[in-house]
Length: 215
Image (cartoon, rainbow, N blue to C red):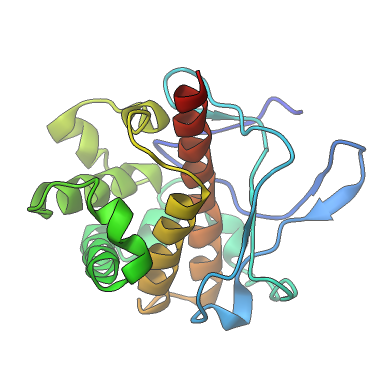
């Protein structure tokens, strides 16, 4: 594993080829041209994604999030900029764009039968949950750290460790987010990139929650 770091609080890296445990090159596949389809499969990494105690992702491990049977889409020439400075934050439409995405995500969660379980993990009034997620995404994508300004620092996986989150809950969350992203006026390349990056904390939260239950 190399020593490069992608900060969960600032800038996720763009996707691309990496080596598996045997040293073979492997390409992480994103939803691509069929992005508006439902989430069919989210494949876990063969190993845990490493996190520092302060909630920072270390190294280049990422879960392979893709639709079953779909090839990788052609990459946009500007995609290499995602994850650099505020590029991802701006590609998402800034704070207004992220609040629109978050509102659509929670609306989708309220509509989707498979999301009833994760919806019950939130307060009945979702106003604060919507605000927290929108603020978190601002900083996570390289924009202003709105979450820290209002709520303080967060250790994302451990903040969810008390919840009964397993594979079904992870997939329901990702499915709602995928459909919400698909409805946004964003470039296809950024939709792919954003969803692929969101697989990282979603999978890590599942790992922490299941480990705490087993422990």
